[in-house]
Length: 67
Image (cartoon, rainbow, N blue to C red; front, top):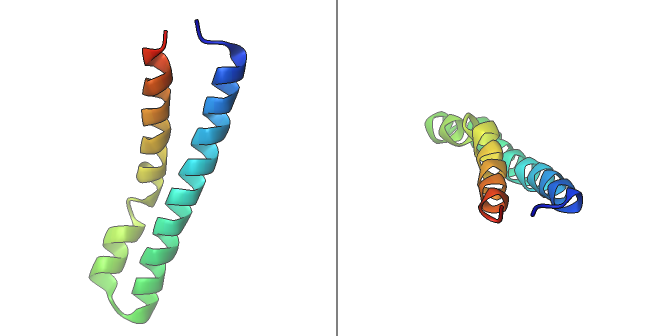
């Protein structure tokens, strides 16, 4: 059975990891855009938010398997 503390840890972990991954992808992409490499920069910057959310989804599925 999944406890409340495991759900809390899942939310905190997903938030922190998603923010770090999404933020780093956004930073790297915009740095490339500012340096003049527009195609690769936007290719990295645009999927930053879905990539961060995808990690949260993977963590949630891992917790759901425990049920």
